[in-house]
Image 1 (cartoon, rainbow, N blue to C red):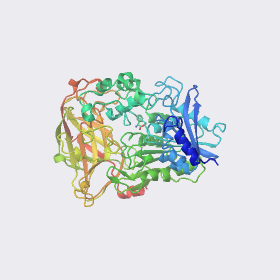
Image 2: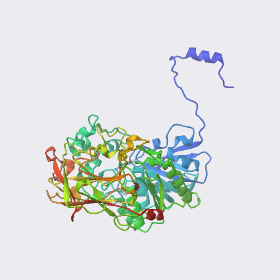
Image 3: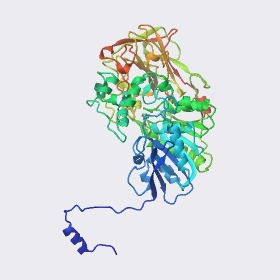
Image 4: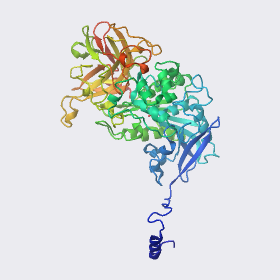
Length: 630
Ligand code: PG9
């Protein structure tokens, strides 16, 4: 009957020639409830892409959900080794498994198991890509292969695409010339414009926090090492040199992707030619699309909202939807019950996945009932619930029902909706002592990156190079729902400089339930602007020393209530380091190549009152307007 007798067991124990380690040892295979196939799918240029196809045993006539990734398709499709499909695929796929989908992960060309050359966020075929292939064609060819019954007999011929960040970028690329079988898409925090506000720069300020990504992602075909930056404190590691000098010392001059960044510090054709909003505007697709972005996305807070607005402008408002939840980058695919010290009403990420994405995909891929999504589902980060809007933003700079309301900086560090008296507040911004984005020591891998945007801004409040303006304690709710702008008038003794503006909700001084939350300073929106680009993103210019200039820039979207007992605060500073590289504050042609002697302290004066009155333009809406939008 195949079972071993006592005698057999004894004999095996005695006879083992090499001791206790047999020549081979194989665990019996557990019966799997799924099939996992690995195929190499040929593209039009003959390059084959490594693709993992996973489906439940016995599945027929099922739709396909496709993710194209630079992050290892094999690993993405293997949360753990398990006979169960639910445990094998990632958490965010559980709904697709339960609903009977075929799940496909593919390595993009040149990474991991795929053939071909890897180019970071490979531009579309054209002036920036002189080959005949890009992510538009690769997605098209992949979908074409997948819906061929000879290749995947279990398929019903319909495909949806989903993915976050770089994987979101590949979804958007597929939308530029979608295969007819691509019926629905969910780009999550997609990388849309790497210079304006996703990943590499924010309004021209370079994000050192991402510099290691280039080394690990382009130094190796598979998973790579992030280069050592020095000691534990990245604040120290990056403080004594330009990003260019750090990179050179780390061998980055061998990396074409890095050399391109150094050669294109401004918003020239290299960056604007890759801006996906421009490409979407040129060929807006009809594929129903659910855009997603975290309200505290520390990596790609620009992309989804701008792409959604582009699609609405292009007349595709009825097939495009936006969801913004209280999430850090890609948290939407994990658990969304909390962020930093903030707890939400349940698992908001699961709510997005199961109540929004799944019905949306079912509608277009399984002929399910209408998903009945609101055009915009935006989490209210103060009232702690989803708001469902017929259109959004409710208030913005141009084209919204409600114009922005200026909240003016005032003498005596006040903030008010009326202009105050003329004056200014000065601080010395010293590149030798930049304002840290988190309390030191700051190590990019210390686990604080994911929720740094919601950390208490009291850590910088009170520094001599940070100016905090605040309203009195509010007696009435100030409801904001839309896109704020910073409008700062300032002069500096330097010839270049950065402006960081934070819109902060200051909590009541006392919190009887959780004492340390008393007086908490939560930034609901913040960004940085590199002063040399105040007149043109393409052609930077020196700031005339000691002459007031205007720095006007859009801030990340908000849907919040400043409640009675709270205060509204605006903090302004000229560095946010080591997240962003330091501005030398002396105009140089290329900050990546700045010399140590170029870095100079400067006195910055923020102007208030009069004709050039600094303000943050708030998307204030009346409570009933917000409610009517629902
Ligand atoms: N934010 C990451 C990234 C995207 C695109 C380029 C570089 C980095 C990501 O999470 O994929």
